[in-house]
Image 1 (cartoon, helix red, strand yellow):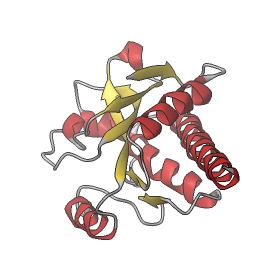
Image 2: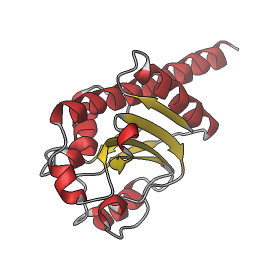
Image 3: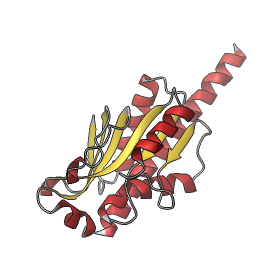
Image 4: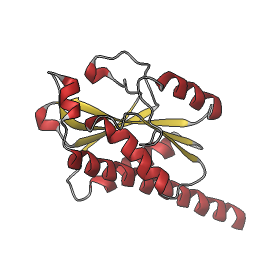
Length: 190
């Protein structure tokens, strides 16, 4: 759907515009941002960092965040967390956020796409698919010794990517919120 390098000056803006379009197209009334990963691995901390940045910011009440540095969503509790989200937010659109390993030339790229993601696929884990759409960041190159690669990923890259991704989500949800309020105001006037 949309693919941009995190160092581009307008990376967050480009991602947010694509996310806004998708939220409007889906007529999203409730959004769950499901951030996958662990704080025990530098490369795999991308999701929890995004979740933490989002939880520290003001969010519209129709947006919920699962997966932070303090309370990560990872392989050991993924199914339990998915069940909880399905119970608490049965009609929500779920945006899954996760790190991924890719080609060396793709390191630093963030992708927003339709459909679920398969967490743990880069390290050979078989976990249930997550999300109606996904936002992923290529944190390092895959293909050999994936656990070691994730452990030795540069934190500065992961932090910068997480900031761009969280900024894009924040901008998108607040833009949708403003559009809803403007629409409600117009409906009241007429």
